[in-house]
Amino acid sequence: MDKKTLVAYFSCSGVTEKVAKKITEISGGDLFEIIPQVPYTSKDLNWMDKKARSTIEMHDPSSRPEIKNMVENMQDYNVIFVGFPIWWYVAPTIINTFLESYDFSEKTIVPFFTSGGSGAGNTDAMLHPSCANSVVWKPAKQLNRVNQETISEWLKNLNLLN
Image (tube, rainbow, N blue to C red):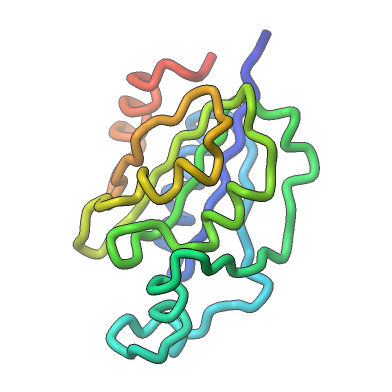
């Protein structure tokens, strides 16, 4: 049976989107953008402002920003790559919203992220419970300023694609 791959991503600045598109191109998977119901403005993303929307969301672990769109045929996918920028050493809570929106039993989840400077921090610990029924959870992988060759090698080493 062929494995069907989805590359879902959330990106505010376009950095994560570029990586997601490279993964899609190399893997032959389908691309899906996670779009917030209420788009983030540059003011919302000002991490230095304690009243900025992203700061408020990230300080509330129960925060679940709404998503505007849904993957209509999630049941068809076996491997789901989930991409996002790192905010405060974890994934934005909209990623939890995404993961909690589907049944991931019998699926492999592969998180990847981009970051302006911080590492994965508690990303896996904060995300994995949102889809604990997945068959396989791969550790989150940082993919900053990567080229096709680096992504190809990473995908090959995951041994998930046909």
